[in-house]
Length: 294
Image (cartoon, rainbow, N blue to C red; front, side):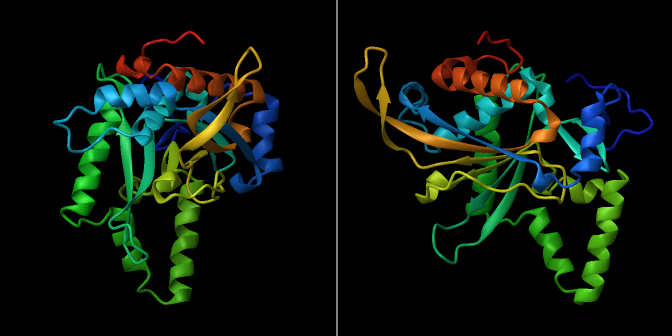
């Protein structure tokens, strides 16, 4: 989506969709809560091509390795660039095109029961000549280093820490005021820029902690329309065209999407593109705006 001049009715984080069909204009009044409009999709991903791709990327001199997480996020980012309706959201009973492509995720400082977590958000440049994989990799690397080596905290956690010191009645009033501001498109940019629920895609890499859940709910807070859960890598059976079966490394990808932002055909074609990119990960070495036939 190209940069546009801000007009009356736009938000800090989105452009109002002015040409909209009757159904999508009426839906937020019929079904106003994002969490009541979840469409859940699961994909079993054959990792054969991705593993070969990662082996080429992870040369001996690289200490911070490329992983499935980087490739999946890069593929999702490219899908959003080529199919921008996936980056829409509802707020204040209106539909918007999100201005930026934002990915959020959780970084575990230590893999222990009591290890603290930090929330992270990265922005993908849709106009950059740098490949989506390199964009994701370099930004995730910096965040992980800052969190684990420098023991930095994130802005959202710091702000929640301040709010938690308020009496409950005051905290409820503050949250009600923030919801009112968001409804009218006046939510402070200083709060929005660190809040993972104002991102395009919230990604949970449960495979990194050996967990197999493939569903996570959306929230009515913020504007996040897509939640992706990356499952654990394991060997699964794949049936070939001749009827034979072959065991391959695979993982399950769960996607929870606000079904109001597009129709079923648009979602289906977006998943087809995602599948094409993950079966041909070399396409992710090209600039993110490079078209893909699928």
